[in-house]
Length: 124
Image (tube, rainbow, N blue to C red; front, side, top):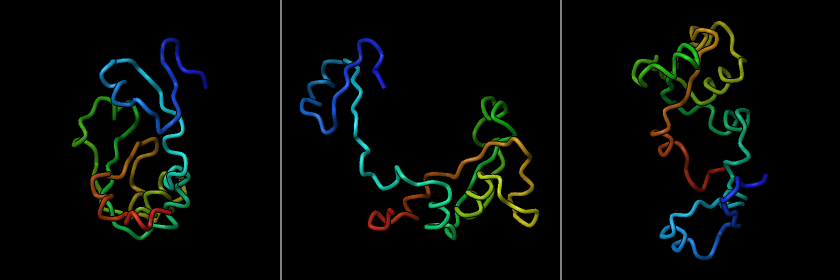
């Protein structure tokens, strides 16, 4: 992918990074996450590896509502990573606690708790 006009591309790790910060010049670093284990995760692999971990998830009625609602106005539920991934993939049954979330809703897992879940040595 070509960088927009006037934006330089540099491979990561790049020499001169401190110089760029002082120059206030936009730059795109390429390859910075190559080899990062999380870059290959899918909802399926995440659920398989960490499915039983409890998390808090937030839901909003729709993408449009999420754009106008404050974060705290959405519904917050305790669930597991596996159940959330199944919900996100649309593969849950009526017995799922997330089945009550209205169709078309948006949701995300509260990321601030992930540091308690993921052991850096266990990042598959």
